[in-house]
Length: 256
Length: 255
Image 1 (cartoon, chains in turn cyan, yellow):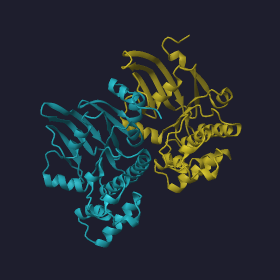
Image 2 (cartoon, chains in turn orange, brown):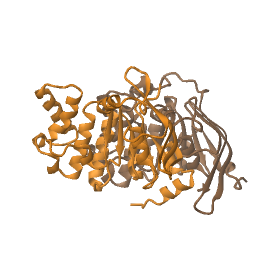
Image 3 (tube, rainbow over the protein chains, first blue to last red):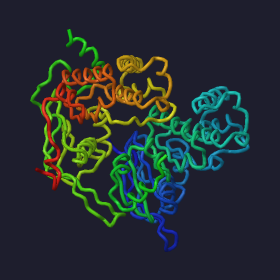
Image 4 (cartoon, rainbow over the protein chains, first blue to last red):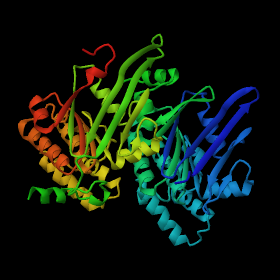
């Protein structure tokens, strides 16, 4: 099996400060990788470099295109990258309002992404949108409501539906459960886990919540001060952490 | 006749690397060589605690080996290392051809999915998932048909006396004993060629204990290599072919 994503020597600096430095990893199809670390550790910077929102100073982000060729997404043209982000990639933002169009109905939010890849038949688009709203447990009766009328948890589920409707192969998630209360988190995690399994998605999840990665991620990358300090199988890193910082991180979690 | 039942119970035979009817008892499924383990506590004065040295163990198909030794001797540590949950400091742990010590995460996950089962003492599940799906999940993840997987789950839950009215509920709200039995049902759903059992009969009543011992005997009969920790001596004597005292591998504890 060949990797879906090959990340080589990615570094990003903000002036003289390090955003992230010399990050390397391969992500295989169907694999879910978690990136954890405290605020300011560089995990969001890295995610934004991978997803094309930031341009790294050094390194390559090689993505396997549908024809099987590995293309560097850092150097590809803007229209090409935009096409990727509409089709094979998805990005779930921490704040749903960053990933949704707040003045467009829920159905429109989902349908818009379909139209961006060429769907034109109104009936089909609406049907597909309703199907996806159902999958993320939003009732058909809410299809014409705007996201502003939704709760935080519903907005987040709508954002997920909007992202997954085009059948992406790689999903970037930035704190997908951040700011939601725990019962809503559990529901969202269960939903994400099911969708990832069902669709065979590869995903990269940035979070500071270790319980989230334990449930969702196959493997884990721990970052501190812009550097990757430890990587491995998720349960191994959490249960037998090797690096001083990871040990501190794991032992700092309050037991419920 | 027992054989027929066993073949039937191995419903996903095509996913078993071992054919349930013919297995060579000689083939080593788990081979551990010169295994060592240390814990470094960086945040407690960087103390390095050696917990295992030069551990050796082989388990053949169809064989059950009990790990013995006082509490703290390293039984669970060894088991967790075999499962890839703890990182070894040196040596090798080859399970069905894969060296867990050096394998990539995705290879360990594939091994866990298809070859190596682990019944721990505690159930860890995603909230909201119904018990029936919790038990069927290991089969679904090796590609078994949904209904066949659910049938197997129903069969196991019934054998372990989990009332049918609970099957559609999440086990997070169950009693400790019920959770343990759900965990066992889940652990035995897929017919793993190798299994790790951490106190599978602890705190079970007589009837359920008998069911679990029966499941272990069936697994052995279809050729599974098993490593277990049993504080229940009668259970250990009944299902285990030999014992390994892990304290001989513990630095400073060897007699």
